[in-house]
Image 1: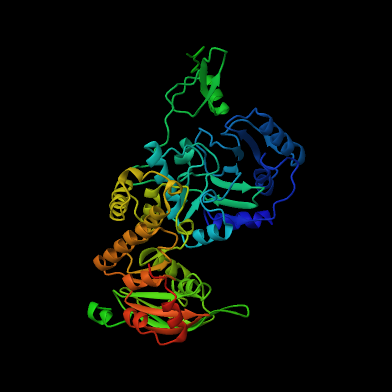
Image 2 (image 1 turned 135 degrees about the horizontal axis):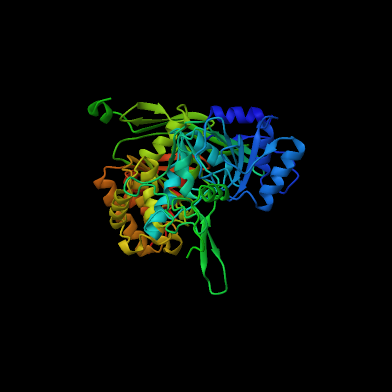
Length: 268
Length: 263
């Protein structure tokens, strides 16, 4: 049943497909949608990686990895390049994904128009008629009140020039990576009972205005551990004086850099 | 369809429109033609089916029987309930404007006035922030809302300003036909007069056609060319506004005219 929903989702890029979401051995909001999608596509030969905000070693990522190791008997990894399936919460790995890999997103609220239009009947109609003017109202308000498009995560995208899609709460820093990605992207929303997908090499465009083009935020600080400048960073307060440390949010990317000898000690 | 041929056609042809809510009559067998540049007033007591009729005409409520044909310059005359919903919505966005009785229904109260006006533009494909803003500013000025209030929420506006904002929002895409449901009700008399002035000049300048519903005969006298008098869902009398108001034929219209309180 879930596989059928996934096939349909891949066939209609960006369109939300309803499915009978099941009870999972973890609470809603912890990745029940992602787990069901992963369970539907995983096979004995797969190698699974699970990240939570980019990190392989958070509780939830560790538990989900362990769950699939125990139930499906698959090999697990923390290395992006080795994985065939990557289940993620709110990040896309820094290491470019390849053909044959599947990226499974955990999605809290699949409907990008939800906070603008509360009625499901109405949002479905808007999708059916590609009537997306209202989404621009939000961006308009951002510019009016902040001088720029201030939406920094869950930044709405248009898939294949047709369906408006929520990219799940990834930072908009990651949005450009979705465009024409060689890997298959699957999105599972367990509580909301929706699955949607972006097939490989599909155009994913972040919405913007002609005179206020989409701009991914840049991170000024280099990673305190590996020195990487281009990656997305976590900000960590390290003492009572309010000193902070910026480190790569993608732990595997950071490890790779350090293994390749780019070690910066102490940071600033 | 070329210009001349189009000018010889009514903009809206309403034919035998009936709406029922279960056993209750919403409106029964309403028929009239609306010509380009004409303002049609619909009067009647509350519950007489005025708003029901307006909802039908503006494509938001399908009648049980009868037809409503709208003539657009592109596709000619077509029944608005026979065409695809996507086309009907496009008409609503592009060629029609609706001003609701309650400003809350017609406006997004939690986004700024500028965005409320700009929404119609963005819905019709405008994607340049600066230009959307300029256009919205122009229309706000026309309905006498100061530029300083452009970024404020309609929640903070007075009733009269909310109505004017609705009008700016309805007119920004240069519609050819506007539907208004009691546009002046709930406003104090001086504000009503200003709003009527504004409506009259806009109708004239833009050669708009309009269907205006009101229970206020004074308002109708000022703004509409022709009148439909409704009672219990049926049109009991119709004709030129002055004619209907000065020489009412139907007993109900006579009653209506004679019960206007003279100030």
